Image (cartoon, rainbow, N blue to C red; front, side, top):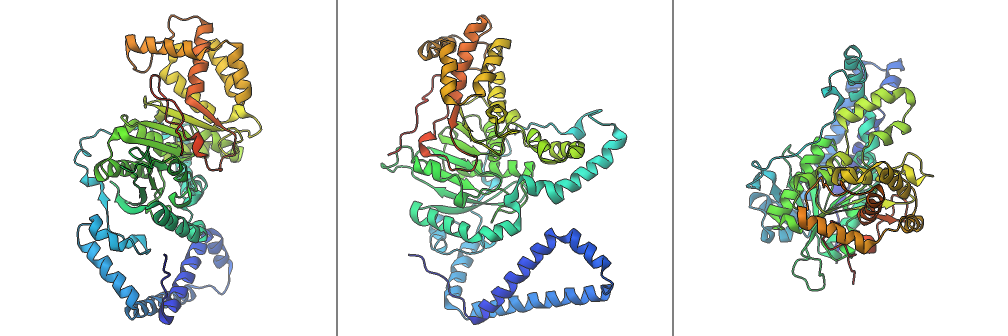
Length: 513
């Protein structure tokens, strides 16, 4: 049963003042350009008045902290909690030490570190794989070097002030304040109903990542419990109210985490910090929780496909990768949503600061994978009225080109693009028209793998006719791609949560009790 902490009068007053100042600060931060212009034009505004105003706010902050401190000092519930917290911070955070602390909900910045990236013995020796397409590293580029430098500066300013918030709206503090109660309720539900365990994981660059683990290993009612699903949320998603529900309903052990700068996780969701965050989460899963790499499925939704594919190409022995409503490259999605005159600036901002390219990273992962396409997706498409404009299609094409280059001749490529432009009923008609025989294709793949091994890029198809290539391409695409008749933001039904596919592996649907 949940007990609500009841502050005394002094603490209530201090909290109200502090919360008001925090909201005022965030409003001022996001309206600072307009605020600065207004103050500049205000004839009564002087340096003296600014100092007086700042001093007044500072004194008000001090008063709020003093009131809150005195109130908590005389509150026995808080002093008991403080004693437990101090013990946990001063000792190694074993589960025995953490157990009484987990009964409390408090500011995550005070939470003891449960796993630090340096605890992984093999971390420093493990090579990391990167994919980089930054324009600043190209010679020549799309514009002359004389113009490049000022454009790069403007692109950096646009990224800091606007771009990051547009790409990752979940990092906006005002939004987080607005949804704070929903996150609290979602976190409480995971802990109380799913026996979730909250943990703090620190990264190579010093960020603290808020994670939630639901461990179902060894529980007979959960046959999939020995497999861990690591969930990577979307651009406004949080593990408290995000995609964890799908693998949990399917009976898996599940590990959720919040992007840097989201809710209690520190930092900002730039690519390098995203990489370090998911890397530390994977190290935590392997070295902190004891899951083998082969027992882990990575599940990414929407923009979470970037962190997912980065982790997959750096942990190639995972059991598989599931990408739901994920794009191949963010630039083609960003350009149509911005004024045409800003094309160069947007390109520089994306390529040099927020270069999210799941497609390029997927090309360096050769393990089992399932791509889930939302047929009514209105977000990762350049034209929501046309299914052929869904960028999941480009992800499929990149996967096929990387793994089966010999199968993609002119005819098979055209037919595959046509197949991707249709919804499932018409896709079946196209496969029937071309006489795709699933059993024959499966046998053909099995024979090839027996003779040549399951290595990529595959040479299968180099001695085939165009018609045979087309049949096999359609068969393979139908295995890798799963269509979900839904808009972008609807939760994925657990019956669609398919074990990632690879020839000669189990491609059956996960059975949910």
